[in-house]
Length: 637
Image (cartoon, rainbow, N blue to C red; front, side, top):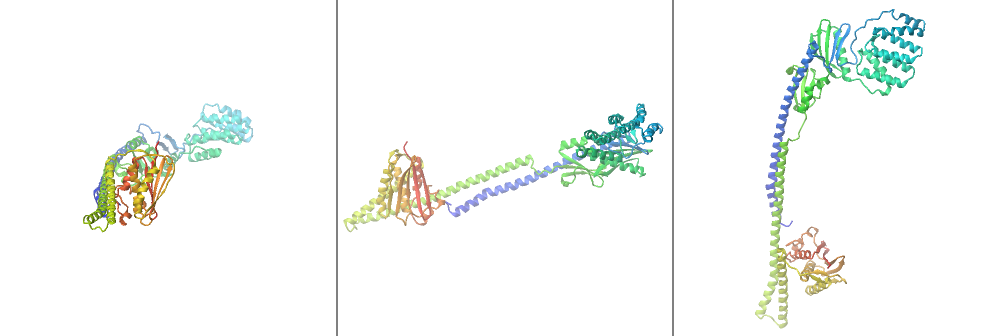
């Protein structure tokens, strides 16, 4: 560092006191304010959840009241998404709303007169004459009673199959399918037609037609087209899957299967005489789903409404609340089982309304998304605090740099004054002593007197050069230095300067070796200024080479530039100081430790002169191996 350790320590302490402490304080303040803002945001979210919970509970209460009116038969109509079933002792007498894939029981259908088909049956089974039975059955298939036509078409298709008339058999099944809900042997005519056509196509090996027929059957079963019992439904589904093989793309809805199982459970309890209130609501748990069942008994009949979790979850009021408030809802039954939604979130993110508080058959959970993101106010606050912290740190940093620079400059100036004083003191002391001896006539001979005069002249020249260099440096720093550029032969200039310096250096035992290069191009230069640069480099090479008394000067062309090198084998310059030595008042640590005199402005002045000539000056050095200073100057165009 360019300034002392105590000053550095004091500046660091000052920097910490003026920047780090306020910055930490701002950080703590910002953190506390952000915590308060998040707490306020959490409180507001809780208030919004409570409000949404009240609205959701009210919406569910209204929906439940509408369902209770429907189950009593006083409502405006059965909701298409709710299953409505009316039980009697003999079976299902009425169904409405959403259709189920199967039902607990079907209502018995009156049987046809036994002798109506006896003639055709005798011909088919006893006599084995299906062709004779076909005209009788064709006549019966034209009756007005759909039940008779359906029974006749089933027999007719069977006899056509036995006679090998498969196309007529298929046509008979298609005619049977148009009778839809008419019961044939306890099954809907449409189902019997689909199954019969499938068996016929399977036996005749018509795979593509069988696949189309099976796909239609499977689709109608999945869409709950017919009123079936569980056994009939499962048999038909398995048969259709077998025909389809791997091409079964439809699948039964697990929600409707759960509703069907709930209806079957309630039917069994009713048939077993399990006591229940005239009007009741309960939760039936099937297939990991909680089905809401509302029932109303009147004499020998019971009406049941089955409500799926999906119906509750898709209520328009809940959907509107979810979109308006950005929250989710969940219901749990009396045993804590999930009806819909996901209530397994931290309680801090929920508003809960228990069944006892809402008089609903469920516990209502209103859930808001976990959010730790700062609000706009927090963001703006943190941005402002961060900006202030950056200003404080940035200002403190630049103040620290400025103060450090001033302290370093003051230290350099102090060293410069000391160095200049020393440079003046030595020649002045010598000149005073010699002058006193000459004035008081203490000189022993004329030769001795002549030597004194030569020393006085040499010291005077030394002082003159030193003062002149200081004055020139001052003019350079003030920007008032003027140069007289003219075409110069660089080789001649270097020879002249080296020749003059050899006379000075030889007195101290130093040798300057010049490696000349011929035919160097001329350069635009100020002779006096460039001479001062070269003299300074030679003088430094001599001063910093206490062991090796030889200095080398080299010249050569380098493209459109001329290169001059001054090389020595002196003490060298550390890499950490090589960029600093061209600064004003800067002297290396080695020069101070070796007590080598200097002012610290020579290299700074040399760099300014070279730059004024649009050139470059650089140094390469290793400690203990010497230094090489290189000057590159552009040639004349």
